[in-house]
Length: 197
Image 1 (cartoon, rainbow, N blue to C red):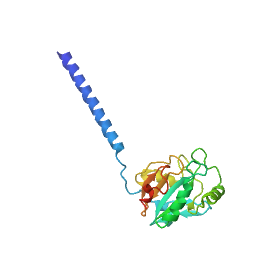
Image 2 (tube, rainbow, N blue to C red):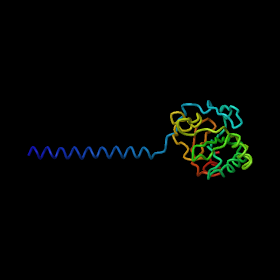
Image 3 (cartoon, helix red, strand yellow):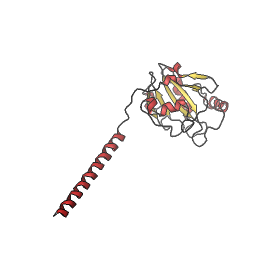
Image 4 (tube, rainbow, N blue to C red):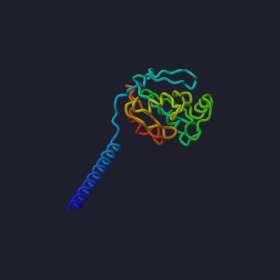
């Protein structure tokens, strides 16, 4: 009798424990599927600066009051054609958004050239006139401060998505808040981007 009661209690406790574990797993899964809550950035976008492709230090405070689209670019990528779309976006929506290009050699060595080579390539092949910067690292140990801010939720308020390939895009609003991340497949003139300008 005591043995049966003990066995029944062990079974009941085991069932309850398993039930609690599944409940916790369910709550955790639900949380991870919920959209990320956007909060105010801890560090200001306007405190950032970067070196232009011509070697000039550019303070991001000059972009205050403007929307900014930041793109990691590469000259030998399957998405390099997006330079054309970025230039058209700059031409058509320049009143509403500033396009900033950051060449990076992070994916399969698709941006091997010097800053001078990159500038020549962009001008010759795509007539790029939007602001280009000196080559940076967008992920890993030597990540540029700009990409550290873009991909650290403790700094930007919500986002941790790093570039998955060349031509990923980040949109900052007029108040310096990061508001959207667009994957490489989202073209510069897509509705997903232009609807937010």
